[in-house]
Image 1 (tube, one colour):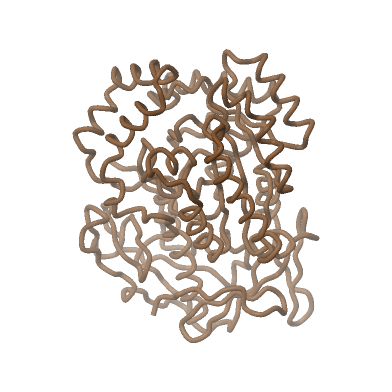
Image 2: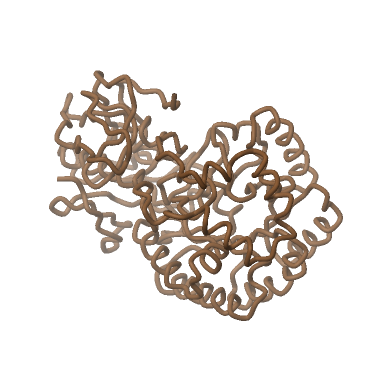
Length: 469
């Protein structure tokens, strides 16, 4: 049975948590007669997974989905949804939704013995062999109905639709909220590098030179176990130049989440390394994950959950372009395709896919999160593509006020924003209170027709978002 988040008929704080807006202006109710089983449904343009009033759900995302938008009611002047917004958004973020059965090849390649053998042999396999095996395993990735490729924002659309309903209810013509990023930045981007082997370690210094040439600081994730001395030497050089250092799994054998008992033992060692090496961030090997086990970790933020994992060995995705909390850990989701997948699976040596993903994420004011590997950027062609990507981000930083930041900086901002609150200042005014509030900006959500519009202070509209009708 798939676990589901709790639900009630009381007002839910999801919209307030997302926007950091006053609760009394943005509370959403849930209808009480939810079905006993979870399934897929539509809510306007968004896809959800959870229980709905009347039980009108589908088994798979590719099925004909019922749109439950017409089932919205109004109770005491507040919208009342035919599903729990907190339950559904948690189901999506934490990947608690039903996926299609695996193909025979995918089942065969996840057998424990085969899995162990592959990762034992992986360091010795030429790139060409690995490419072939992975292409076979990922066959049919472009036919996956959900999450949507190249970017899925189901969570964001659901919450935006709830905000639209609040504004349509007419209690307030516009609702103030704390803007997503500091200093009014339009969106955010972070560059990360996962170091897998000796060639990657040897290329770290040159990769820092490339990043510095574009005035972009990045985060390097290093494998700790069995490499402590090289870890210390490399980390010292990275930190001395203003780069960030995080843990990359424990030993990169692909077995971190193989079973709960083994995971808990490994988590203890990971936490010890995090303390020894003074690391706040983590990313698992091969983007394997089990978010419901994250409570065993002691770090502040994780970067192991893809937005739409079509090209990852573990399918799924969190369906959002915004950071979100998994209990006390902040998840900074991967929202752009990895360089390995771009070069060796898709055989694409351009920035076209990256640019498309960045455009879509920036339009929703989200987090552009990129992984590249020093191990795979050694070649001239790969370096040229990477430099083109950096140039594009630099242009967006200058032209569109994109905030290009380190993961640790984003973690601090998002945690501070979570503690901020809007309080009334006079008859019609508002002010922001809380840590780092001097960097925060007040924004307003309103409608132009049926379109949700954000305005930052007295500025022109930041964006227009399609709303449910």
